[in-house]
Length: 475
Ligand SMILES: Cc1cc2nc3c(=O)[nH]c(=O)nc-3n(C[C@H](O)[C@H](O)[C@H](O)COP(=O)(O)OP(=O)(O)OC[C@H]3O[C@@H](n4cnc5c(N)ncnc54)[C@H](O)[C@@H]3O)c2cc1C
View 1 (cartoon, rainbow, N blue to C red):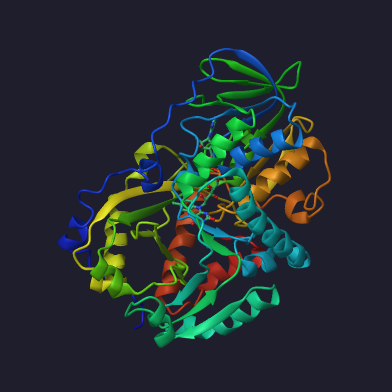
View 2 (view 1 turned 90 degrees about the vertical axis):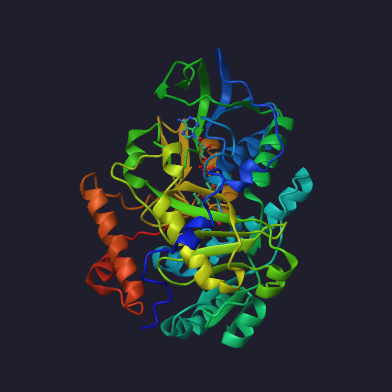
């Protein structure tokens, strides 16, 4: 038996480690205070109204103004900008637009050369944009280590490396000793070090920097202004909030895992919750005990995987593994706290880094992932092209949202761009079935993925059938 995770319940010490943790995303909790943008309290007109003030909405607002400074652009945000997935993620910024090369090849084999090229361009341009816009998002081009914790995973690394190199990445396979020389854990059997197309950012600073840049460019931002209804109007599209109405010529929906304003989109998105813990800053001896001088982003390879990284002040963010889907797909603050996930995360953290025994977690939180069946952003238009949407990044949107925003704008403006002709942009994913079948299918799939992890990666009948149908489930 090589399965690395304990089957006993988490110990009292492992639960105690997060007992005082604040139940808020570290990235948002530690941002400098700022004034809230006032909610919409009137009827106003706009050339473009963007619903959702996460990365997608804010990048789109910024580029809409850059492309045409005379355009009047409004952002409606239900709570505070950057408080959705954009303020809760791991900050792993990747060049992939397709949730990895293997997933992209399975779904868009003809377009992968171009999608990878566009992904690299987007990744490089994002870093240049941060510089140009003066956004200090603690960008660190560290690369990442994909960690094998089981023998069958070690066997896959060489072919993963070849695939990455085929698409222009610099990637090296490290054996156990070399891997542990990078980051010290008794669980690490080998790894794939991808040096290219992978960086770390501070998610909160990225979101808040984009918001500030959009405001500087003249975008009008309304916070605590959830759009309740979207309908056709004389001028184009009318969006109503509790306090007012936006009469817009065009609308971009950037609402991620939240209930979409267009019913037709609901069947494509399943909100899946992912949870994370953040440690207190490591002391000098703790820092020494784990190595990690290269500060790479880390992730283990199983279907249920953890992602972990260092922050600028040497805390460890530890998240993932236990993706949770609830009947009906609710999203809301009450779901940010999930004791069983935190207990398991803590247990797995100390199993991975026993030398950090005694360290405590300062923050714990959860966030909803806009999972779709192809694991990558999809687009569409409605109301005769007056409304467009970009959603479905499925847990890999820190970099891809910049691409999604630009393509969404191209679609609205009717402007042929580098990507608008791609079938990845023109076609939507297969829909999920309605409830109660949806929960049944998702829970069965999660259960089978966990079983495959416990059985040395053997995928079994259900997962093999889904693979053949091009359906799947991931966070
Ligand atoms: C826990 C977690 C970890 C992740 N880790 C990574 C990672 O390491 N790397 C990576 O690449 N990706 C990661 N992701 C995914 C990434 O965070 C998202 O793909 C990305 O932030 C999506 O940005 P967005 O703007 O589309 O959505 P969001 O940031 O969710 O923004 C949507 C916004 O729309 C608003 N909204 C919704 N409905 C309405 C309405 N009716 N009216 C007004 N406003 C509305 C919401 O309040 C929200 O602010 C992670 C996600 C989670 C949850």
